Length: 459
Image 1 (cartoon, one colour):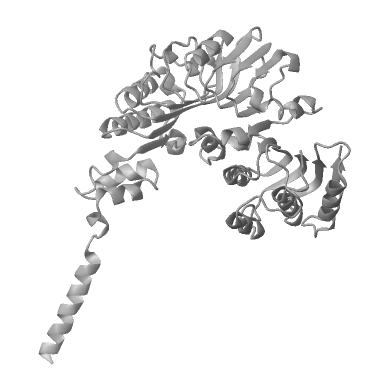
Image 2 (image 1 turned 90 degrees about the horizontal axis):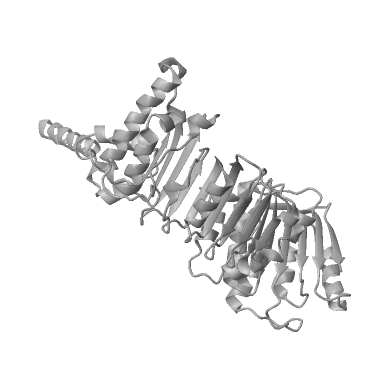
Protein backbone atom coordinates (compact mmCIF):
# COMPACT_ATOMS: atom_id res chain seq x y z
CA UNK A 1 0.00 0.00 0.00
CA UNK A 2 2.89 2.34 0.77
CA UNK A 3 4.44 1.64 -2.61
CA UNK A 4 1.10 2.23 -4.32
CA UNK A 5 0.61 5.52 -2.46
CA UNK A 6 4.09 6.68 -3.42
CA UNK A 7 3.38 5.96 -7.09
CA UNK A 8 0.14 7.91 -7.01
CA UNK A 9 1.87 10.84 -5.33
CA UNK A 10 4.63 10.79 -7.93
CA UNK A 11 2.09 10.79 -10.78
CA UNK A 12 0.24 13.70 -9.24
CA UNK A 13 3.44 15.72 -8.94
CA UNK A 14 4.26 14.94 -12.56
CA UNK A 15 0.90 16.15 -13.76
CA UNK A 16 1.22 19.29 -11.67
CA UNK A 17 4.64 20.01 -13.15
CA UNK A 18 3.23 19.60 -16.65
CA UNK A 19 0.50 22.10 -15.86
CA UNK A 20 3.08 24.58 -14.60
CA UNK A 21 5.16 24.43 -17.78
CA UNK A 22 4.99 27.74 -19.69
CA UNK A 23 4.44 26.27 -23.13
CA UNK A 24 3.66 29.63 -24.74
CA UNK A 25 7.09 31.04 -23.85
CA UNK A 26 8.67 28.01 -25.52
CA UNK A 27 7.22 29.05 -28.89
CA UNK A 28 9.55 30.73 -31.44
CA UNK A 29 9.56 34.53 -31.74
CA UNK A 30 7.69 34.41 -35.05
CA UNK A 31 4.70 32.75 -33.37
CA UNK A 32 4.82 35.03 -30.33
CA UNK A 33 4.76 38.07 -32.65
CA UNK A 34 1.62 36.74 -34.30
CA UNK A 35 0.01 36.71 -30.84
CA UNK A 36 1.24 40.21 -29.96
CA UNK A 37 0.02 41.66 -33.26
CA UNK A 38 -3.55 40.86 -32.23
CA UNK A 39 -3.51 42.81 -28.96
CA UNK A 40 -3.17 46.59 -28.34
CA UNK A 41 0.35 47.98 -28.50
CA UNK A 42 0.40 49.01 -24.82
CA UNK A 43 -0.50 45.49 -23.76
CA UNK A 44 2.13 44.03 -26.09
CA UNK A 45 4.77 46.26 -24.48
CA UNK A 46 3.69 45.12 -20.99
CA UNK A 47 4.53 41.52 -21.89
CA UNK A 48 8.19 42.50 -21.45
CA UNK A 49 7.54 42.28 -17.68
CA UNK A 50 6.55 38.61 -17.81
CA UNK A 51 10.08 37.19 -17.97
CA UNK A 52 13.42 37.64 -19.66
CA UNK A 53 12.09 35.47 -22.51
CA UNK A 54 9.46 38.13 -23.31
CA UNK A 55 11.61 41.20 -22.67
CA UNK A 56 12.51 41.99 -26.28
CA UNK A 57 9.82 40.18 -28.27
CA UNK A 58 7.51 43.20 -28.70
CA UNK A 59 10.42 45.27 -30.04
CA UNK A 60 10.15 43.41 -33.35
CA UNK A 61 6.46 44.09 -33.93
CA UNK A 62 5.75 45.16 -37.54
CA UNK A 63 3.26 47.81 -36.43
CA UNK A 64 2.67 50.21 -33.55
CA UNK A 65 -0.65 51.90 -32.74
CA UNK A 66 -1.03 54.59 -30.09
CA UNK A 67 -4.23 56.35 -29.04
CA UNK A 68 -3.75 58.96 -26.33
CA UNK A 69 -7.53 59.47 -26.01
CA UNK A 70 -7.87 56.06 -24.36
CA UNK A 71 -5.30 56.88 -21.69
CA UNK A 72 -6.80 60.13 -20.42
CA UNK A 73 -8.37 60.15 -16.98
CA UNK A 74 -9.73 63.40 -15.50
CA UNK A 75 -8.64 62.31 -12.02
CA UNK A 76 -4.99 62.10 -13.09
CA UNK A 77 -4.41 65.81 -13.63
CA UNK A 78 -4.87 68.26 -16.47
CA UNK A 79 -5.03 67.10 -20.06
CA UNK A 80 -1.81 68.96 -20.86
CA UNK A 81 0.14 67.26 -18.05
CA UNK A 82 -1.33 63.84 -18.70
CA UNK A 83 -0.76 64.02 -22.46
CA UNK A 84 2.84 65.08 -21.86
CA UNK A 85 3.40 62.04 -19.66
CA UNK A 86 1.87 59.68 -22.22
CA UNK A 87 3.85 61.36 -25.00
CA UNK A 88 7.07 60.53 -23.15
CA UNK A 89 6.02 56.88 -22.92
CA UNK A 90 5.26 56.80 -26.65
CA UNK A 91 8.68 58.27 -27.35
CA UNK A 92 10.35 55.53 -25.29
CA UNK A 93 8.43 52.79 -27.08
CA UNK A 94 9.34 54.16 -30.50
CA UNK A 95 13.01 54.57 -29.57
CA UNK A 96 13.23 51.08 -28.01
CA UNK A 97 11.62 49.37 -30.96
CA UNK A 98 14.11 47.47 -33.11
CA UNK A 99 14.16 47.24 -36.88
CA UNK A 100 11.76 48.73 -39.41
CA UNK A 101 8.02 49.32 -39.16
CA UNK A 102 5.38 48.39 -41.68
CA UNK A 103 2.77 50.63 -40.13
CA UNK A 104 2.37 53.17 -37.35
CA UNK A 105 -0.68 55.18 -36.28
CA UNK A 106 -0.71 57.84 -33.57
CA UNK A 107 -3.76 59.62 -32.15
CA UNK A 108 -2.44 62.57 -30.18
CA UNK A 109 -3.58 65.85 -28.66
CA UNK A 110 -2.75 69.29 -29.99
CA UNK A 111 -0.18 69.83 -27.23
CA UNK A 112 2.22 67.47 -29.00
CA UNK A 113 2.10 69.71 -32.07
CA UNK A 114 3.46 72.57 -29.97
CA UNK A 115 6.02 70.94 -27.65
CA UNK A 116 8.07 69.25 -30.40
CA UNK A 117 7.04 65.67 -29.56
CA UNK A 118 5.15 65.16 -32.81
CA UNK A 119 8.02 66.41 -34.95
CA UNK A 120 10.43 64.09 -33.09
CA UNK A 121 8.12 61.11 -33.64
CA UNK A 122 7.85 61.87 -37.34
CA UNK A 123 11.60 62.16 -37.83
CA UNK A 124 12.31 58.93 -35.96
CA UNK A 125 9.53 56.91 -37.57
CA UNK A 126 10.39 57.98 -41.11
CA UNK A 127 14.13 58.50 -41.17
CA UNK A 128 15.25 56.00 -38.50
CA UNK A 129 12.61 53.27 -38.45
CA UNK A 130 11.92 53.41 -42.18
CA UNK A 131 8.15 53.20 -41.60
CA UNK A 132 6.24 52.27 -44.76
CA UNK A 133 2.79 53.53 -43.75
CA UNK A 134 2.27 56.39 -41.29
CA UNK A 135 -1.01 57.83 -39.95
CA UNK A 136 -1.09 60.87 -37.68
CA UNK A 137 -4.34 62.17 -36.17
CA UNK A 138 -4.52 65.41 -34.20
CA UNK A 139 -7.34 65.87 -31.66
CA UNK A 140 -8.55 69.03 -29.96
CA UNK A 141 -6.99 71.12 -32.68
CA UNK A 142 -9.69 73.80 -32.69
CA UNK A 143 -7.51 76.74 -33.68
CA UNK A 144 -4.69 77.27 -36.13
CA UNK A 145 -2.03 77.81 -33.52
CA UNK A 146 -2.63 74.46 -31.83
CA UNK A 147 -2.74 72.41 -35.02
CA UNK A 148 -0.07 74.09 -37.14
CA UNK A 149 2.47 71.51 -38.23
CA UNK A 150 6.03 72.86 -38.36
CA UNK A 151 8.34 70.40 -40.10
CA UNK A 152 11.68 70.60 -41.84
CA UNK A 153 11.89 70.50 -45.64
CA UNK A 154 11.92 66.99 -47.15
CA UNK A 155 10.47 65.50 -43.95
CA UNK A 156 8.19 63.10 -45.84
CA UNK A 157 10.76 62.32 -48.50
CA UNK A 158 12.13 58.86 -47.74
CA UNK A 159 12.21 55.81 -50.03
CA UNK A 160 10.61 53.54 -47.42
CA UNK A 161 7.54 55.75 -46.83
CA UNK A 162 4.87 54.90 -49.40
CA UNK A 163 1.65 55.77 -47.52
CA UNK A 164 0.91 58.89 -45.46
CA UNK A 165 -2.30 59.94 -43.72
CA UNK A 166 -2.64 63.26 -41.89
CA UNK A 167 -5.74 64.43 -40.02
CA UNK A 168 -6.54 67.92 -38.71
CA UNK A 169 -3.41 69.99 -39.23
CA UNK A 170 -2.59 73.36 -40.76
CA UNK A 171 0.27 73.87 -43.21
CA UNK A 172 1.98 77.20 -43.87
CA UNK A 173 4.21 75.76 -46.59
CA UNK A 174 4.58 72.61 -48.65
CA UNK A 175 8.27 72.24 -47.76
CA UNK A 176 7.87 68.97 -45.78
CA UNK A 177 6.69 67.35 -49.04
CA UNK A 178 9.67 68.39 -51.14
CA UNK A 179 10.75 65.62 -53.56
CA UNK A 180 8.14 63.11 -52.36
CA UNK A 181 8.54 60.70 -55.28
CA UNK A 182 8.20 57.90 -52.73
CA UNK A 183 4.54 58.44 -51.78
CA UNK A 184 1.94 56.27 -53.50
CA UNK A 185 -0.94 56.92 -51.07
CA UNK A 186 -1.65 60.34 -49.56
CA UNK A 187 -4.65 61.17 -47.36
CA UNK A 188 -5.19 64.73 -46.16
CA UNK A 189 -8.18 64.87 -43.80
CA UNK A 190 -9.44 68.21 -42.48
CA UNK A 191 -6.21 69.90 -43.54
CA UNK A 192 -6.19 73.69 -43.85
CA UNK A 193 -3.80 75.67 -46.04
CA UNK A 194 -3.65 78.13 -48.91
CA UNK A 195 -4.66 76.78 -52.32
CA UNK A 196 -1.12 77.29 -53.57
CA UNK A 197 0.25 75.11 -50.75
CA UNK A 198 -2.05 72.23 -51.73
CA UNK A 199 -1.07 72.63 -55.38
CA UNK A 200 2.62 72.45 -54.48
CA UNK A 201 2.08 69.37 -52.27
CA UNK A 202 0.27 67.52 -55.06
CA UNK A 203 2.88 68.47 -57.65
CA UNK A 204 5.67 67.26 -55.33
CA UNK A 205 4.16 63.74 -55.23
CA UNK A 206 4.23 62.53 -58.88
CA UNK A 207 4.07 58.80 -57.99
CA UNK A 208 0.71 58.97 -56.23
CA UNK A 209 -1.84 56.31 -57.06
CA UNK A 210 -4.31 57.19 -54.30
CA UNK A 211 -5.09 60.78 -53.28
CA UNK A 212 -7.77 61.60 -50.69
CA UNK A 213 -8.39 65.31 -50.16
CA UNK A 214 -10.73 66.50 -47.41
CA UNK A 215 -9.44 70.02 -47.15
CA UNK A 216 -10.25 73.61 -46.28
CA UNK A 217 -8.59 76.65 -47.79
CA UNK A 218 -7.93 79.93 -46.02
CA UNK A 219 -9.28 81.80 -49.02
CA UNK A 220 -12.01 80.81 -51.48
CA UNK A 221 -10.07 82.42 -54.31
CA UNK A 222 -7.88 80.21 -56.48
CA UNK A 223 -7.84 76.99 -58.49
CA UNK A 224 -6.98 73.62 -56.98
CA UNK A 225 -4.84 71.81 -59.55
CA UNK A 226 -4.60 68.03 -59.46
CA UNK A 227 -2.39 66.98 -62.37
CA UNK A 228 -0.90 63.50 -62.06
CA UNK A 229 -0.14 60.91 -64.72
CA UNK A 230 -0.09 57.97 -62.28
CA UNK A 231 -3.17 58.70 -60.19
CA UNK A 232 -5.71 55.84 -60.07
CA UNK A 233 -8.01 56.96 -57.23
CA UNK A 234 -9.03 60.50 -56.36
CA UNK A 235 -11.40 61.64 -53.62
CA UNK A 236 -12.30 65.31 -53.20
CA UNK A 237 -14.10 67.10 -50.37
CA UNK A 238 -13.62 70.84 -50.61
CA UNK A 239 -16.46 73.29 -50.08
CA UNK A 240 -14.73 76.67 -50.20
CA UNK A 241 -12.87 77.11 -53.47
CA UNK A 242 -13.51 78.75 -56.82
CA UNK A 243 -12.28 76.11 -59.22
CA UNK A 244 -10.89 72.56 -59.38
CA UNK A 245 -8.82 71.34 -62.32
CA UNK A 246 -8.15 67.57 -62.55
CA UNK A 247 -5.96 65.94 -65.18
CA UNK A 248 -5.40 62.23 -64.51
CA UNK A 249 -5.41 60.00 -67.62
CA UNK A 250 -5.16 56.74 -65.61
CA UNK A 251 -7.92 57.57 -63.13
CA UNK A 252 -10.23 54.57 -62.54
CA UNK A 253 -11.87 55.62 -59.26
CA UNK A 254 -13.26 59.08 -58.59
CA UNK A 255 -15.31 60.11 -55.59
CA UNK A 256 -16.75 63.39 -54.44
CA UNK A 257 -18.39 64.49 -51.20
CA UNK A 258 -19.81 67.84 -50.09
CA UNK A 259 -18.14 69.81 -52.85
CA UNK A 260 -20.18 72.83 -53.91
CA UNK A 261 -18.04 73.83 -56.84
CA UNK A 262 -20.19 74.53 -59.89
CA UNK A 263 -20.05 71.95 -62.67
CA UNK A 264 -18.49 74.43 -65.12
CA UNK A 265 -15.74 75.17 -62.58
CA UNK A 266 -14.88 71.51 -62.04
CA UNK A 267 -12.65 70.46 -64.92
CA UNK A 268 -12.15 66.71 -65.04
CA UNK A 269 -9.82 65.31 -67.70
CA UNK A 270 -10.12 61.59 -66.97
CA UNK A 271 -11.74 59.74 -69.84
CA UNK A 272 -12.04 56.40 -68.03
CA UNK A 273 -14.58 57.66 -65.51
CA UNK A 274 -16.30 60.52 -67.33
CA UNK A 275 -19.16 58.40 -68.65
CA UNK A 276 -20.13 57.15 -65.20
CA UNK A 277 -19.80 60.46 -63.39
CA UNK A 278 -22.61 62.35 -65.14
CA UNK A 279 -25.33 61.44 -62.68
CA UNK A 280 -23.68 63.33 -59.81
CA UNK A 281 -23.88 66.66 -61.59
CA UNK A 282 -27.36 65.92 -62.98
CA UNK A 283 -28.88 65.17 -59.57
CA UNK A 284 -30.96 67.87 -57.89
CA UNK A 285 -29.68 66.79 -54.50
CA UNK A 286 -26.01 65.81 -54.65
CA UNK A 287 -25.13 62.90 -52.43
CA UNK A 288 -21.62 61.62 -51.66
CA UNK A 289 -20.78 59.57 -54.74
CA UNK A 290 -18.09 57.21 -56.08
CA UNK A 291 -17.47 56.22 -59.69
CA UNK A 292 -15.41 53.07 -60.33
CA UNK A 293 -14.35 51.75 -63.72
CA UNK A 294 -13.71 48.16 -62.66
CA UNK A 295 -13.13 47.02 -66.25
CA UNK A 296 -10.04 49.22 -66.54
CA UNK A 297 -8.78 48.67 -63.02
CA UNK A 298 -8.98 44.86 -63.31
CA UNK A 299 -6.20 44.98 -65.90
CA UNK A 300 -3.71 45.81 -63.15
CA UNK A 301 -1.81 42.81 -61.76
CA UNK A 302 -1.83 44.29 -58.27
CA UNK A 303 -4.25 47.11 -57.59
CA UNK A 304 -3.40 49.02 -54.43
CA UNK A 305 -6.29 51.37 -55.13
CA UNK A 306 -8.82 48.51 -55.11
CA UNK A 307 -7.39 47.22 -51.83
CA UNK A 308 -7.73 50.76 -50.47
CA UNK A 309 -11.40 50.91 -51.49
CA UNK A 310 -12.48 47.63 -49.89
CA UNK A 311 -10.22 47.77 -46.82
CA UNK A 312 -11.93 47.93 -43.44
CA UNK A 313 -8.93 49.83 -42.08
CA UNK A 314 -9.31 52.78 -44.47
CA UNK A 315 -13.13 52.78 -44.14
CA UNK A 316 -13.18 54.55 -47.49
CA UNK A 317 -16.67 53.45 -48.58
CA UNK A 318 -18.29 54.79 -45.40
CA UNK A 319 -18.18 58.28 -46.95
CA UNK A 320 -20.64 57.58 -49.77
CA UNK A 321 -24.30 56.97 -50.50
CA UNK A 322 -24.21 56.16 -54.21
CA UNK A 323 -22.00 54.14 -56.55
CA UNK A 324 -21.54 53.90 -60.32
CA UNK A 325 -19.46 51.08 -61.83
CA UNK A 326 -18.42 49.76 -65.23
CA UNK A 327 -17.95 45.99 -65.25
CA UNK A 328 -17.65 43.04 -67.60
CA UNK A 329 -19.44 40.07 -66.05
CA UNK A 330 -17.64 37.73 -68.43
CA UNK A 331 -14.41 38.51 -66.61
CA UNK A 332 -14.20 36.49 -63.35
CA UNK A 333 -11.77 38.94 -61.78
CA UNK A 334 -14.05 41.90 -62.44
CA UNK A 335 -16.98 39.99 -60.97
CA UNK A 336 -14.95 39.26 -57.84
CA UNK A 337 -13.89 42.91 -57.53
CA UNK A 338 -17.50 44.08 -57.84
CA UNK A 339 -18.55 41.58 -55.20
CA UNK A 340 -15.81 42.80 -52.83
CA UNK A 341 -16.98 46.40 -53.21
CA UNK A 342 -20.62 45.54 -52.49
CA UNK A 343 -19.74 43.33 -49.52
CA UNK A 344 -17.55 46.10 -48.06
CA UNK A 345 -20.28 48.74 -48.40
CA UNK A 346 -21.55 50.29 -45.18
CA UNK A 347 -25.31 50.47 -44.70
CA UNK A 348 -27.98 50.91 -47.36
CA UNK A 349 -26.86 52.41 -50.67
CA UNK A 350 -29.18 55.05 -52.11
CA UNK A 351 -28.40 54.38 -55.75
CA UNK A 352 -26.28 51.86 -57.65
CA UNK A 353 -25.55 52.26 -61.34
CA UNK A 354 -24.05 49.27 -63.17
CA UNK A 355 -22.90 49.84 -66.74
CA UNK A 356 -22.13 46.59 -68.55
CA UNK A 357 -19.33 46.69 -71.09
CA UNK A 358 -20.26 45.86 -74.66
CA UNK A 359 -16.83 44.63 -75.75
CA UNK A 360 -17.98 41.02 -76.01
CA UNK A 361 -19.57 39.54 -79.10
CA UNK A 362 -23.27 39.00 -78.43
CA UNK A 363 -24.21 35.41 -77.74
CA UNK A 364 -27.30 33.65 -78.97
CA UNK A 365 -29.91 32.89 -76.38
CA UNK A 366 -28.97 29.80 -74.41
CA UNK A 367 -25.35 29.85 -75.59
CA UNK A 368 -22.84 29.89 -72.72
CA UNK A 369 -19.80 32.17 -72.84
CA UNK A 370 -18.29 31.16 -69.51
CA UNK A 371 -16.53 28.05 -68.33
CA UNK A 372 -18.38 25.20 -66.66
CA UNK A 373 -16.79 25.94 -63.30
CA UNK A 374 -17.80 29.60 -63.44
CA UNK A 375 -21.31 28.68 -64.51
CA UNK A 376 -21.67 26.39 -61.46
CA UNK A 377 -20.61 29.29 -59.23
CA UNK A 378 -23.32 31.51 -60.68
CA UNK A 379 -25.97 28.80 -60.43
CA UNK A 380 -24.90 27.90 -56.89
CA UNK A 381 -25.07 31.48 -55.70
CA UNK A 382 -21.34 31.64 -54.92
CA UNK A 383 -20.68 34.73 -57.05
CA UNK A 384 -23.16 37.00 -55.27
CA UNK A 385 -24.31 35.12 -52.17
CA UNK A 386 -27.06 36.53 -50.04
CA UNK A 387 -25.50 39.24 -47.87
CA UNK A 388 -26.40 42.32 -45.85
CA UNK A 389 -25.86 44.67 -48.80
CA UNK A 390 -29.00 46.58 -49.83
CA UNK A 391 -29.66 49.30 -52.39
CA UNK A 392 -32.69 51.56 -52.70
CA UNK A 393 -32.56 52.14 -56.48
CA UNK A 394 -30.62 50.11 -59.06
CA UNK A 395 -29.91 51.18 -62.63
CA UNK A 396 -28.53 48.63 -65.10
CA UNK A 397 -27.23 50.24 -68.30
CA UNK A 398 -26.40 48.55 -71.59
CA UNK A 399 -28.32 45.46 -70.48
CA UNK A 400 -27.94 42.53 -72.89
CA UNK A 401 -30.77 40.03 -72.56
CA UNK A 402 -28.66 37.35 -74.25
CA UNK A 403 -25.93 37.62 -71.64
CA UNK A 404 -26.82 34.98 -69.06
CA UNK A 405 -24.52 36.53 -66.45
CA UNK A 406 -26.30 39.86 -66.59
CA UNK A 407 -29.68 38.20 -66.28
CA UNK A 408 -28.43 35.99 -63.44
CA UNK A 409 -27.11 39.02 -61.55
CA UNK A 410 -30.40 40.88 -62.01
CA UNK A 411 -32.43 37.85 -60.92
CA UNK A 412 -30.36 37.38 -57.75
CA UNK A 413 -30.82 41.04 -56.87
CA UNK A 414 -34.57 40.50 -57.21
CA UNK A 415 -34.95 37.21 -55.34
CA UNK A 416 -32.55 38.05 -52.51
CA UNK A 417 -34.22 41.38 -51.77
CA UNK A 418 -31.01 43.26 -52.56
CA UNK A 419 -32.92 46.01 -54.40
CA UNK A 420 -35.47 47.58 -52.09
CA UNK A 421 -37.52 49.98 -54.20
CA UNK A 422 -36.72 50.26 -57.91
CA UNK A 423 -34.80 48.31 -60.56
CA UNK A 424 -34.39 50.31 -63.76
CA UNK A 425 -33.11 48.46 -66.83
CA UNK A 426 -31.84 50.31 -69.90
CA UNK A 427 -30.50 48.76 -73.11
CA UNK A 428 -28.31 50.20 -75.82
CA UNK A 429 -31.10 49.62 -78.38
CA UNK A 430 -33.91 52.12 -78.83
CA UNK A 431 -36.55 50.84 -78.81
CA UNK A 432 -35.57 47.67 -76.90
CA UNK A 433 -35.82 44.34 -78.67
CA UNK A 434 -38.59 41.84 -78.06
CA UNK A 435 -36.03 39.55 -76.41
CA UNK A 436 -35.18 42.28 -73.91
CA UNK A 437 -38.83 42.91 -73.11
CA UNK A 438 -39.30 39.16 -72.57
CA UNK A 439 -36.27 39.04 -70.24
CA UNK A 440 -37.60 41.93 -68.15
CA UNK A 441 -41.03 40.29 -68.00
CA UNK A 442 -39.33 37.14 -66.74
CA UNK A 443 -37.63 39.15 -64.00
CA UNK A 444 -40.98 40.56 -62.97
CA UNK A 445 -42.36 37.06 -62.55
CA UNK A 446 -39.61 35.97 -60.16
CA UNK A 447 -40.43 35.66 -56.44
CA UNK A 448 -39.34 38.99 -54.95
CA UNK A 449 -37.29 39.23 -51.79
CA UNK A 450 -38.92 42.63 -51.30
CA UNK A 451 -42.62 43.03 -52.07
CA UNK A 452 -42.29 46.77 -52.68
CA UNK A 453 -39.82 46.32 -55.55
CA UNK A 454 -40.83 47.65 -58.96
CA UNK A 455 -38.99 46.69 -62.16
CA UNK A 456 -39.04 48.98 -65.19
CA UNK A 457 -37.61 48.87 -68.71
CA UNK A 458 -36.36 52.33 -69.73
CA UNK A 459 -35.37 53.69 -73.13
